[in-house]
Length: 232
Length: 53
Image (cartoon, rainbow over all chains, first blue to last red):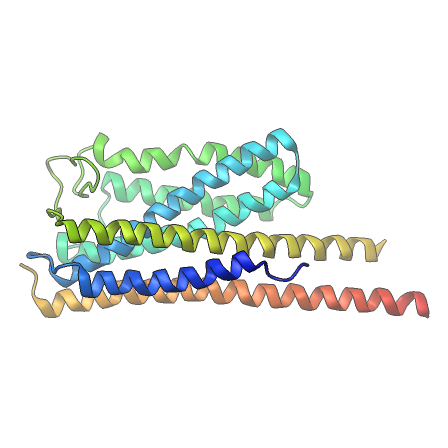
């Protein structure tokens, strides 16, 4: 395995700087919201985690399509890496959303359209990991996984649009939500700037983590191949 | 309006989750990387030793 590329080291340093910058913007720059005050500060990282979570599922589906066309196992590694990282980010989004919901809605969880579709989305990709564990042949596993991520990706726009399609208490950040939305707030320019900074920060972190995870996948594949050759 | 004490408590819980989950994942990546590197070295060493026997 080649030594770590300089660009990846640079991306890692940039991720750390941006992460510290994002924390500073959330706690020192963004104003305190009048009704929810401190708990609203969860919003910036909650939305950033949800964004990269969904982004990763789309990246995985794209890698799946490329695999089905090219039949090159390196795209299977990219797909697996994107799903694993997105599961982590999306899990954080669900949990932080739940923590924010308690003081805002009076409950940690409700079977609202957004919450339900988000939970289903997370479970679909957890099942993806189980599916992969159940198939030993790498090419068969890659083929099934690629098709699975393609079908699973349908749940991404469904979850994203759920707050616009169905009556829900989850507020919509982009565009107007439904009339039953609770916990929505008017964003000041400083809040908007902080939100976009956090979205950019987590996008960079996502790219860095994806690169690390792809390298890990390649290393694992190399070990597997050597083990197989050694056993022959 | 939500009281400051309650609001701060939930905010801290939210950020604690972010740090713990993300931190655990990064550590897991590092541990897996080290494990595969060790496996790779072991196999290469075995390959060198076996033809010599």
